[in-house]
Amino acid sequence: HGRFPVKNLFITAGLLFCCQVAVGVHATEIYTCTDNNGKQVVSDRPIATCIDREQKLLSGSGVVKKIVPPSYTAQEKRAIEERKKLAEQELLKAQAKERSIAMLAQRYPNSDAHQKARNEAAREISVRIYAANARLQVIKADRQNVETELEFYKKNPEKAPYKLREQFKSIAENEAITLRYIDNQNKDLAALHKRFDDEMALLENVWKKSAVSLLALYPLGQKRITPGFGNQ
Image (cartoon, rainbow, N blue to C red; front, side, top):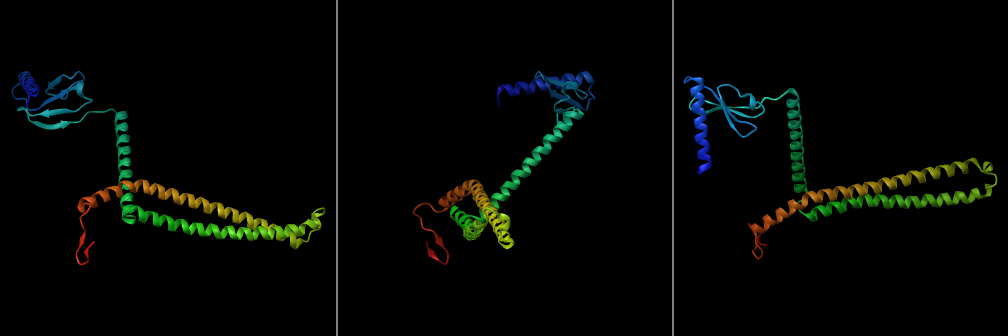
């Protein structure tokens, strides 16, 4: 398989032989690792210079019995656990996103279905906005009529009838409420379009893949045959 791996094999075998000679022919466990300098180290006990890296525990015949993981300080262990938790959280987020996309794709199998749903949802909000604007025009007309009556008391507003003043106050409150309602509905409409835009960004690739798969099944010019319904 190449000269370099064979050379490494001979080196490892030589080191194992030397270790066996050094510790006695009855040695049953041999540790080996590659240190910071890229040098292969062999010993009959865990190797201190390789405490921060993986070590192999070999039998006397050179068979790997197990892999000894690195030994970390308490701070290093905490850092490793934190990285592990973050990785798990990212994985859960990715899985949740995939599930969400799958559910959206099932609900909106193509862009036409998605656009239809957007239009229907937007129409409902637009109808509410239209009705509120119509109501606002009525309120403004009522306010104008009351303001016209209050003109007679412009120099002495305190002489205006209590009922007229209360009517003006009520109209002003209704106008403010209606304006807030229209503003909230416009915000809802903007949020709706943003949601559909975000969904479309997620679904575009799914739709493209679906179209490619369908084209592979039914190349251009080939008729689709649906059992019981004839050719399409």
